[in-house]
Amino acid sequence: MTLMLWSSRTKERRATILAGLILLQTVSALFFIGDVIADLRGGTPLDNPHVLIETVASVVLISGVIFMMIELRSLLSRMSDMQSGLDIARGHLGEVIGDFFHAWKLTAAERDVAIMILKGLDNDTIASMRNTAPGTVRAQATGIYAKSGTTGRAQFISLFMEELMSGELDPDAQSNPKAEARGPRPLPDSARAS
Amino acid sequence: MVALEQTDRGQHGAREIPVWDPLVRLIHWSLALTILLNGAVVEDESLAHEWIGYVALGLVALRAIWALAGPKHARFSAFPPSPRRALVHLGRLLSGERRVHLSHNPLGALMVYNIWLSVIALGVTGYMMTTPAYFGIDWVEELHEVVFGWLILSVALHVAGVAFESWWSGVNLVRAMVNGRKTIPPGSNVE
Image (cartoon, chains in turn yellow, red):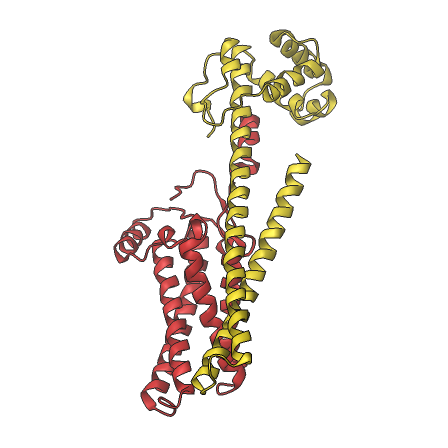
């Protein structure tokens, strides 16, 4: 995740630099074009070396601007693809988690505790966040592991990791086929976050 | 379930959507700077005034090209100049219906075209004053002055519109033009 964020920040910086270059280079190109026009109107012939060089410079600068615009365009579309990919993955994970909780018939309190476990909180922190005794949280956690058929925290968390890494995360599929194969019914519409 | 929704949508259920790409933002603030410099800082008949004017023309030209070839939100098609849509939008405002627009809202779109056209008109009349054929001709100079007055009025309206829309829709538009992202409050009607 950190790696993803870092690379998206780098992309953003690259996009900003590209945009700045496009802007400055356009202004430079306009300067040369304006100078060529002024020279030609002043009666300088087109084959004058000064005018010739400025014409070539204008063409090169404009080509550079067009090229950088294409680059920026594709960089921006890659950035937005990655963002929507992340959104889809997040949405999917949320759905898969919801499907599992539903299938395991977790109570509302157990769902909350289960989510905090998935987020990496330990029992004491969960207890203080929920204003309950650590013993209660331990009991709820045991209930969660029993209902999910896992032996403990590590295996419980890896259930979802496995779900993410088992491939075939098809962005267009509405729900995860594996989760369905295991039996959970789809969530009611009201619980589906979109 | 509450906690799960938070994992889905991020803090407080607000969504951040990247809208303005860096080129759009740079052009916007550069154009604002050229208007400020030429309107209030630089001497009217100086060489700097001329050059800043040409830079402003170049910025609008570049923005127009980007509106044809750029990404989705930067394109003309994202904010077509449509008085009909502007009227519909105005009707919605009056009836109290709040709606978030990812690109410019229809009224704002008209203001965008208005400001660009004003800058082009200023640039053209300004250039005409430097040519022998039109130098010292009164109507050119008067037109330049009138369009400048119109541009300043437009900029004031633009700033007021941004302030109003930010308050009305709950999306901080100034920040969106700085970091490129619109933070959409939960439950917003997005268009």
